[in-house]
Length: 428
Image (tube, helix red, strand yellow):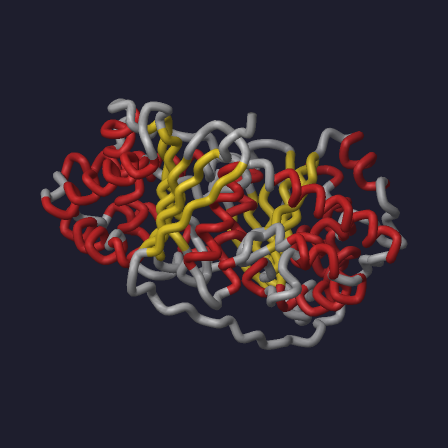
């Protein structure tokens, strides 16, 4: 049976994407809000993530804990994620009781309470989460690199926020952020699974149609110019292992260069997964950096990260330093491999293999009903659903000549921040 895809919009502005998939008797429901750390200002970092936490504290209709019990009782799952450009909430349930997720998401879109006592309890939770991350070398390194890579754009801050902001944000700050961004016109409802489209549209209208449209507010996002020189930073902290992170300014997902950089990423480090929900994986053992650095015992591991974002973000190469080498040695080895890409034409078979691996990872990230629902909304956070449907075709058009052009443009040393993480010396 051919999957039926439908796009709609309610009078209050809510965008609705539906995809009938009758392979299993389940329905996955996602609500995406166009708000993340990109929408935060200094003094309010981490507020989007904290508001996400508060959405699980209950409403008058659904007190805290009630939905946990009901969803677990029927074998369903529910959770949420906050990222740079978006916040999303998802529920996957047996198809015959899918109205639970519609009712719950409609209710907390407009009726979350933000009780002062719950706000204060959750302050402890998010600060503890932040402090837990501060024990992780890769978090400390990544945060420092991110700050160094941007001077003005909110992408310079981690989603978790700065500890000093988490200590001072108020209940009113959180509630105003919620009312500003949690409105139908700023949301996409994406549902995939075993349902009839017309019946589902009627249900969506019943649950969401009466929610007030809310007031649209414009925000100005500061832009950062492309760097004009290389930055190097060193971070010290707990642990016994050294790390290297190399972060290049990368194009936004809607930029045609993004697809060629995806192929270059696959060639250098193995393909990056765009689906943060869970997607399987492919090996990176044929990538150039793995073969040169890991098999050459210069690094213990290496991987790349290229994320689809609304504004230009970062392409990072992340390496664990071999105990017998130094971060400087690892950086020199990476630069040697990048110089090879720039000086020696990449062969068509190598490009074909890199494209094949990127396609395979993309296929893994799209295969089940929950992932189909994920993509229905996710792609609209930085582009449109057509971006998802045309992704493989864009990759297939990438040529060796385009890869060389992209490497020359984006992998220039003046377009990057290099971060070294070294363990603190232990005191006897």
